[in-house]
Amino acid sequence: MDQKDAYLNPSFSFSNRLRRMLWAITYSLLFKPSPRVCHAWRAWLLQLFGSELGSNCHIYSNCQIWAPWNLVCGDVVAIADGAIIYNPALISLGSHSVVSQEAYLCGATHDFNDAAFPLLSATISLGAYSWVCARATVLMGVTLGEGAVLGLGSIATKDLAPWTLYAGMPAKKIGDRARNENSHHEN
View 1 (tube, rainbow, N blue to C red):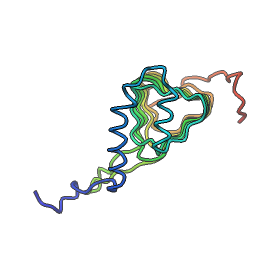
View 2 (view 1 turned 90 degrees about the vertical axis):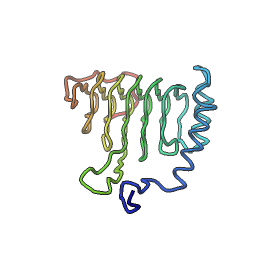
View 3 (view 1 turned 90 degrees about the horizontal axis):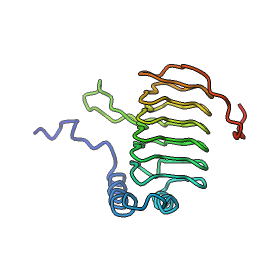
View 4 (view 1 turned 180 degrees about the vertical axis):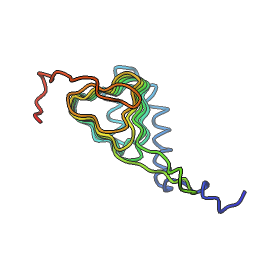
């Protein structure tokens, strides 16, 4: 093959690839096999690799976090089994937000119009009390407002307004959500 083929250029630096390799080993040997109730252990491992986590986060052993150093979580955040956090760019999860089973936060894509097919990434932000339901997908650059809900299997291609319900592909507003009486946040 021609060594000038742009597809052969790595998307990430050597140091980034080395950190991800070390995380993959740690994930396989220490994170994934940990008992379901060992949330503090998994939080400690994520923090060891640069995650910023608030108190009482419940991050389950069968979720996948691509780059812990690009993950910021408020207090009482939950990331369920099977959830995928693909975060070449920062992903922040607000206090009391939930990422349910097999949900996918996709923080990158490729520029298919460029011959080099370069990676493009952007941040994802979930507001406090927001919920990404099972098998739902949030695309790069999208913000879920405080209390927003992305329904089962839906795809968020643009920002979701606070305290609203969205569903579909692409997700469309289908209703309002009652403000959580425990929420201490004001708009």
